[in-house]
Structures are given as C-alpha cells and as structure tokens.
Length: 88
Image (cartoon, rainbow, N blue to C red):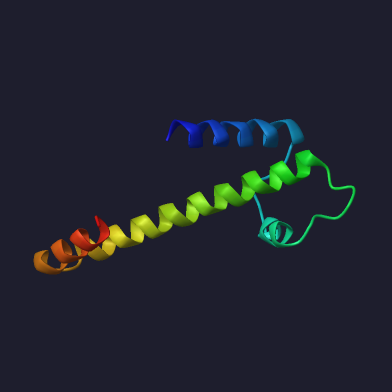
C-alpha cells in the first residue's frame, strides 16, 4: 500500500500548492467519460483526481465502519458466515 500513500502524498502537496479545498462534486468522473475541454490545465485535472480519490477513501472508510457495526450486532454464527464470505 506504499504506492497508494505516495499518490495521496502527491495529491496533498498538489492541493497545498494550489491552495485548494477538499470538496469535490464528482466532476472528474464526467471528465473521465468524455474528453476534457481544451484549456483545462493538468494541475486542475490532477487536483480533481486527488479530490475524487480522497472522497472514495472516505466512502470506503465509512462503509468499513458501518460493516463493523453490523457485524457487532449480529450473532456469532451469522458474523462468521459473513466474515468467511468477505475473505473469499
């Protein structure tokens, strides 16, 4: 996972140098599907990519926390079945 942390470090340093915030509205996904308009700077695309990745990480963390809470509230038999399914 070292490569991922290097990418996030790059994202953070890019955001710091651009003075940007972490907010993203998912516009990167739209740009990935269609060609970006002319005149869009590489730093802007990188910034939006970093924001999109950061938001995905947040969603994964939230889902992981939610799954942990659900597993805590199920009985041990159900929890072991769910764990075995997730480990496959």
